[in-house]
Length: 319
Ligand code: AHR
Image (cartoon, rainbow, N blue to C red; front, top):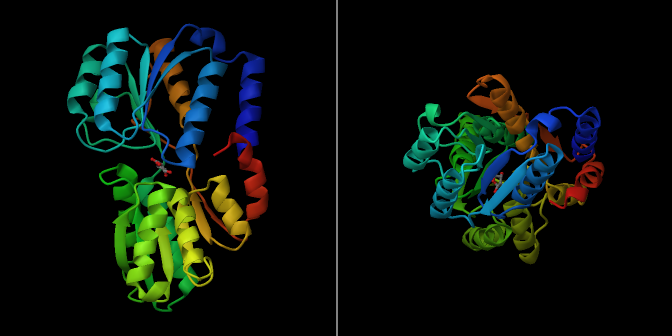
């Protein structure tokens, strides 16, 4: 996938597509932070896309704090940027600042996470169907255990974030009606590797040294990678004693899958900026209003899908 993005970007540059028109555009980007490998990749790809299109990208790292994002947006409005990209850490609390950007006639594009504000306050949102991601993960587990009893522990993403809410909902929908599968413990790991490990240690301790856990569902791969470490330290074999399904498809989970230590992941593309910039360029050109939601594709990868090859294909972006 990474190679495809690089090749497509190179081709676009060679053709000069959009780049000349986009010269001198100033874009403010309020990023959540760097909690996960996926987040780092999204930042890298956004910078690459902006550079290729000749934009001046003003980057603000909110370090997981909504108040920092609100301050960054206000600063972008004061600077009179041409557009704002916002990856919102949580779903609520954006109405006032989005209204300010709207009144300043600065288009806002949401990246990867959603807000519960009136959609008229932003131009469009680029992201995947987060409920569907959870459903795909849950359906994989339903098929994998094939009617056997399965006690599941769940590592949730950041509390109040749209992926944490929707991925939980989707997974629960997939296992509903399958009484052999139960979520017995569920806690946030804040999308980080460190907290994923720490919370998994507490799950293991509470569940008979981990022997009563059949599967882990982690809302992202980084938490799964942290949990794999905890499982190994408890003397169990991840991927066998405890099945592991997570979301993102970052290189490290493919390395774990290649080693037999993780079982499945649902891909979330980190290239949200490409579709966002395409929509902005059409809007700037002649006022074309994009769809309110531009959906990116997601698909399931298992150990049968050449995880070593997927690792090689993705590792160069360092995520
Ligand atoms: O919003 C997307 C989620 O945020 C990714 O799944 C996770 O890795 C990141 O922190």
